[in-house]
Image 1 (cartoon, rainbow, N blue to C red):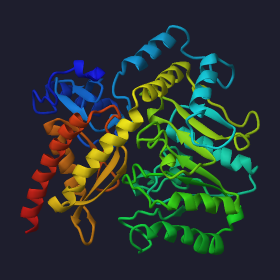
Image 2: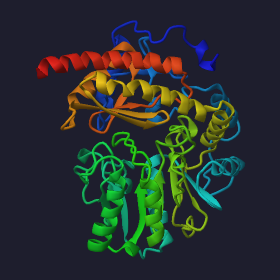
Image 3: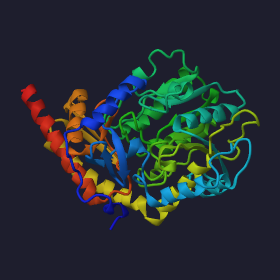
Image 4: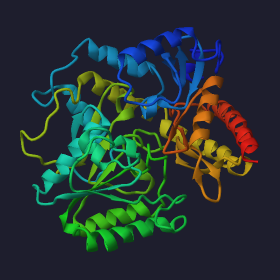
Amino acid sequence: MVWYSRCYDEVPKILVPPPGPKSREVIELDDEFIMQSFSRWYPLVVKSGCGPIIEDLDGNLYIDFNSGIGVMNLGHNHPKVVEAIKKQADKLLHYSLTDFLYEEAALHAKEFLSIVPIEGRKKVFYCNSGTEGIEGALKIVKGYFRGSRQYVLSFIGAFHGRTLGSLSLSGSKAIHKKYFQPLLPGVIHIPFPDPYRCPLGVEGDECGDAVISYIEDYIFRRLVSGDDVAGVFVEPIQGEGGYVVPPDDFLPNLRKLCDRYNILLVFDEVQTGIGRTGKWFAAEHWGVMPDILVSSKALASGLPLGAIVGKAEVMSLPKGTHASTFGGNPVALAASRAVIEVIKSEDLLNNALRVGESIIRRVSEWVDKYELVGHVRGKGLMIGIELVRDKESKEYAVKELSQVLMEAFRRGLAVIGAGFSTIRIAPPIIITEELAHKGLDILEESIKVVNNEFRKFKY
């Protein structure tokens, strides 16, 4: 019996149609006092959580396919994580790691570096979030070449954060950059090899080779020299861009390309890391080792912690050039050590692979079953179901995605989108196959309702 089975006897449970009266009170306060610079898929007001279950303010229970947007990989309130937080909070809450030293940081670094897929001796810099990690990685990459290389490459469809440096690298939605130009100069965006929607006009796995050729033939010969490029930033699987998995040969060939031009390869594993794809980090699926890897989100099970890991010789910024007051907070580090221990002791990497394969087998059948379902892809418990209005033209089903997510919410499943019309399946990696399929029952019913309405409208 899993530890969270004691929390609730019936899941999902909808006592009142959401949002209920208590939730609506919070929604009104939120609208009045909080800047609304973000968009929400549906009005879920979360009160508490236990494992892969969340409860709203009105007592409704939902299966969580969001994991707090890829953060709660161990589910909500794992007892070993909570215990580690309480124990550390009684000892030390904060004392600025970049000005002084404490044991928790050194112990965590030793454990954490042992699971990061980078060859040889490596070092870590602690920060507070994914976007801060990308900002730091940008400085490390440029600092390594002492400013002699002016350019960095990133990919269309990428999401690296919302601060100005990381935003400069992002390329998933135009609204993210609206009003904020000019951004960081010297950033060149490259098409990402999406086998389903290859921007270079070839099909399937050939898209990866086409992108590599594009970089060499068009960027390095016509735009900038390869030896003027400091780094390439890439998500091994694009997250916000639509849970897009590249062809198998793409990342190995990108590694070779970077080696030819002595370019640093940076993996943004903020969402793909800490077991999400059934490996500690998604890079391991392709046997590719970056020069720098950025991790955050699930690293401390809900507490703010980010980490930049790189080869020791690359992590070479001079003293005084980079620091972080709150980075490496001892409570967050204690939580993170517990996360690593739990994933090992509960064999959660294999659970993510096993349950993920079961989900993909089932939802892949929906491509032939439902007119709106165009494509299924993923690794482990990072799975995307792309909805389309036409399977030949692959027109994005933007409105229909919102309708499916709202239908699911009303039935007791918390799930959101990615890209323009992709359902993002990312439950905690502790989830059982039985509970995952109970969530899929809700999702399929929601797709069926919207699909039927779509057919009526279309025909």
